Length: 185
Ligand SMILES: Cc1cc2nc3c(=O)[nH]c(=O)nc-3n(C[C@H](O)[C@H](O)[C@H](O)COP(=O)(O)O)c2cc1C
Image (cartoon, rainbow, N blue to C red):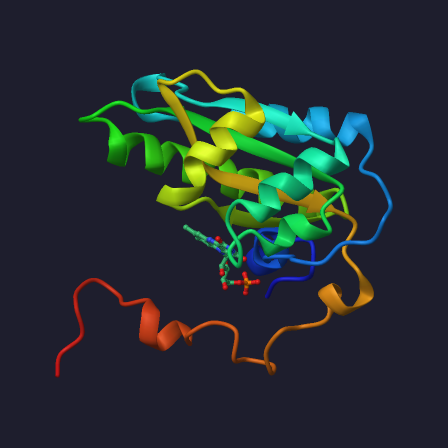
């Protein structure tokens, strides 16, 4: 028997709680929280410990809205975000998958960290066409680009509500997790 302190599911609850937030209040995010989240990103593991990322922490409202404009509708979380962390990676042929994997690990950790701090966070993907605009907005060198901007802020009441009916947000365990081998039939 497990109680709440020893129940493994309760221990990992902060991970289960980290969901995509797309709507934020006007309240700013503390600088200390932003520093902590940037540390969470830079402490992520990466292939060969390459640490391909450089993070740009943005709090200037005009810059955040311009980032939002560069990738709608995918960037809609940036329309109300009060802070953002742009994850830049090198544009290096041969390393695309590796860098994307590393970037995803960092992004996810920032989402989890934000949730643990009582903040909301959302991934905003910048697709091919928007990348040049984002590069200009953030003053990136030619050999770097941004695919993921993490929108940050304090979630609105509406954003805190479940987006789907109970039990509907994820496929059931029985359909997604198999034991020992692919199931028969
Ligand atoms: C690789 C990746 C890219 C994503 N891109 C976007 C995006 O561009 N815009 C957005 O609003 N959400 C984006 N999301 C968030 C997903 O839509 C979200 O994780 C999914 O709907 C589950 O949401 P939930 O965790 O709140 O249930 C992305 C998620 C991942 C993993």
